[in-house]
Length: 322
Image 1 (tube, helix red, strand yellow):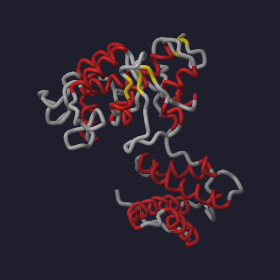
Image 2: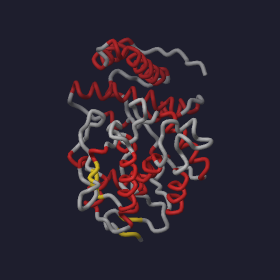
Image 3: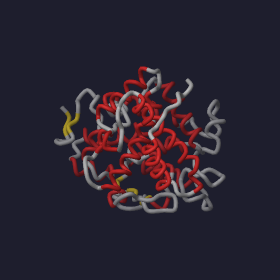
Image 4: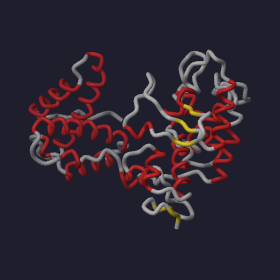
């Protein structure tokens, strides 16, 4: 669809250029600066052309934002396209707010996603988790059909990755960069303890909370580590070239598994949601859940990780089902 030409008042264009110059002062970001400037310019141009008087960032009201979204939808543009432009406008508004430090907080009006379409977190059922662990055994470098996708993946590696999410609650990126030195398999209570490495920066003190390993996961890790040679790279899932699993192949595996299982919410983060939901169903209290999930916010755990679509909804406040 051809993009219509838009006219932005000179004073707004000057403000946008000042914002872009302050944000992207380095030439390495020239292309990103051009993209952000174009997105914000198109959004403001649409708003101005439709009769809204915009003299400064303070004029971006909820009515203006709603009208922009409605007119773009009526013109046939996707919400993703509209969201990118709203995000650019919001960054400009946030920059202006930071400079003035007075007046209304206008940026809170600019929603860059459709909250009413947000899906509730869904956890895997016991049958779905068993199917995934059984299927993952056959995803490796010598498997038929998946050999070209899972090149350099040793046997049982993908199953171990799934177990790290289901039984230990690791985020996908944390699991992919997990190092043998972060495992305490010979401790009286086997556990893992994430550390700051050249591949990972821990965001807060909760990120380094030790989390107990289930017997199933501890045995799988022990077997996997013992099969690695002494010269193996530190990350457990490193490939021969020294890197980790490539993102395109990793995503393709999940797309194939989603098609095979018929589970439309099957992805890497479903493993972490399953871990959280099972812990709460078992009676774990709020503080205990925040510790094992390594979160600082109860709201984050409640909203994104504890599933409510099960037969017996779980209350995070009580830690009990029903």
